[in-house]
Image (cartoon, rainbow, N blue to C red; front, side):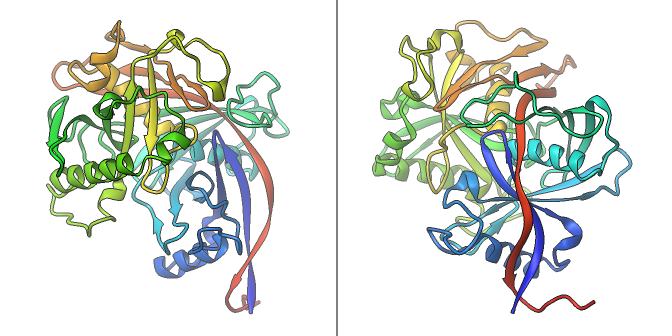
Amino acid sequence: MKRPVRCAIMRGGTSKAVVFASPDLPGHPEARDRLILAAFGSPDPRQVDGLGGADPLTSKAAIVGRSTLPDADVDYTFAQVGIAAPVVSYAVSCGNTAAAVALYAAEEQLVPRLNGSTPVRIHCTNNGKRILASVMSNGAGPAPDPASPAAAVTQRGSTVKLEFLDPGGGDTGRLLPSGAPQDEIRLANGTRVRFSLVDCGNLYAIIPADTWSLTGSESPAELDCAPDLLRAIEEVREAVSAQFLDDDGRSLPQGRRSARLKVALVGRPTDVGDEASGPLNERRTQLVARIVNPERVHKAFAVTGAMNLAAAAGIPGTVVAEMLDQPLPPQGGVFRIRHPQGVITPEVEFSTDPGSPGIRSIRIERTARRIMDGFVYVPGEEPQS
């Protein structure tokens, strides 16, 4: 038999997610993950028998419910749903999906609606961090903003302003997990790879693109068609994970451990605009970057990637700081990053406390839109009345 499970399909920023209300899912983790895999049509590279879009950017789930914490309105659990593999991973969070969660909370009346801007206090269960969101609204509900930014999407949605509070160290407990602004490893073929390991939103290894004679402005298609490069990056991912992610005794199997680590390639801006995003001169940006996921290169850019690069921009000695013509001011500011679909502009506020570097908050504006809602049908018994 097939049983219906209520859900909504929502776009947040440049990602698309299936949003479930937590009471509608099984309480047992294994049963919950089986349901999510069935809803997405995984494992199947096409995801033809479910809601997944056969791409990491569209194979995402969000589980949302009222928070039991006094300083949050909703609990948000992000899940990256495997496409060809039967895996539901909670190892990382997703900032783009957080924008969809804020809109969902406002539309589902999990928070009081206000004229002008509806605040939503989000507790991200993946890393225990807090996100303050503001959803533009008119009192009757979220209001689409015709002037809102809509890079890399075809339809504008409600503007959602996100502020990530104290975002450093959510995975490892430290903004710089190794304690150093840069580290180096040697690959099996002898290539020496410099990188900055930064934990801000998610854990990232930030690598100069010229390590492999790249500029950082290559298209995702070009990078996806370079198997030697992708193999080298996966070797970096596994080697860095093995060296830095077992220090608290949480030894994880190969592959699952490295899934916690994101990789960004960065380069200096050039005079040449990115064809995918128009003729905008890259001199207006401070960095060009690409994110390489284990399955394929990110077609746009992750909010957590932007957070990490902005954080690294304010830490002397990092790969990012070394590339900047002018460093960010000590108090922080807006950092402009060109990616395959345009420019993302996180605004970082640095801690002024003496000692180790810190991040007070990072603000990013996104748009979000509800695409549809209803029921997805998955194998199982009909619920008893």
